[in-house]
Image 1 (cartoon, one colour):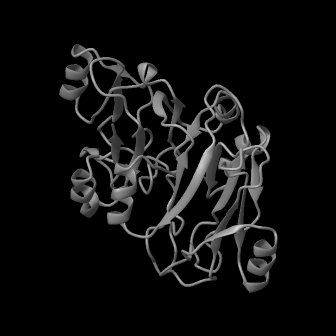
Image 2: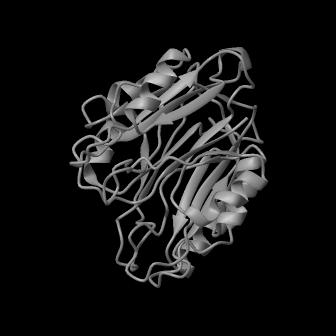
Length: 295
């Protein structure tokens, strides 16, 4: 149990840092506001032998928080974007013990896409929300990564177009990818969700994205299953964007993430990560978003 992370915390000043050190927390020496101005913010963790943390989530709107608070997640009441003028971002954690919960044993914070690509290629799992999201001065793209006690694989995918089913999905062991696939496009808030297993035989083995009618028909003929939610809903685009997956005939998928920087594609590919270079915001003026996965 001592190898599992059991507590996480955030400091906003020197007094809080001193207090966390006295409580036995370990500091991650990366400013979560790096390059964006604002406060010097640091993430901390502790391994004290109590129940392990199994899920971390981020929120940048009140709507995102309801399902978390309803299902026993604890919010750390420190804005990870404090003073930077961007989205108010909060970290939540849960100590679940269900079938789809695997303890977290390490946490890291990255500040460049090259570092991101290396971590993705080496079995780490990334939280989807940039901690400098919409910061006034921009700043670095900063992400939290976790390592689990056992290798996990993606066994289920879904997507939501509102917040009504958040509670049931969190209760069922799903992890929300906390970035809107319609970011900047003016459509519905649409989120991808995944569930993990430690059994590679239950894993998904292939992912595809269709952004044209021809691709839609093609993947249907090739035996892919389709996630029913149009990831482009409500944007006014003439294109529908769908996620497709298979469960047989390939290596199990370990991790899935959203990539928002086109310049990062080659770095991810160099580290063995598959990048589906089809924009989830195809046909609208939203932020470019690619789905990536590692096997």
